[in-house]
Length: 144
Image 1 (spheres, rainbow, N blue to C red):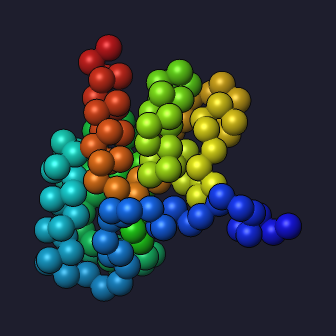
Image 2: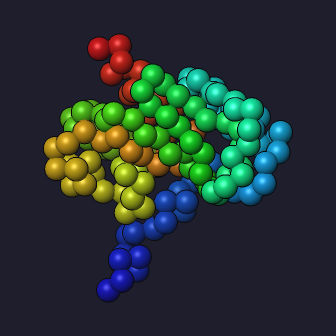
């Protein structure tokens, strides 16, 4: 059976309250919406003097928390950083695994299944609640 037809595997954008699809040309309104999504999560937004006119979302906005970067894609944020320890990543997955997707996998595997005990440094985040949760986990790790 084809992977995408397996029972129980739905595209991640089939979840309630996913971010708005921001694919397409740049606009001031889009940049403001993206800045607001980051601000709500407590993520520092950065505005570049040039527009990203390639890829899905044309914008001047990215986000960061220390060593983690956040870039907007179609209906989700891509978060990349040095990694969340396996035990903490597993706890995050238990509550938010359908909207904070390990390695961007739409099948939503657990960090344990995907990374075999290694830290998770790549997520796709589909909702504001998920972005808030991931940002909090990163800040908590940084606090020590």
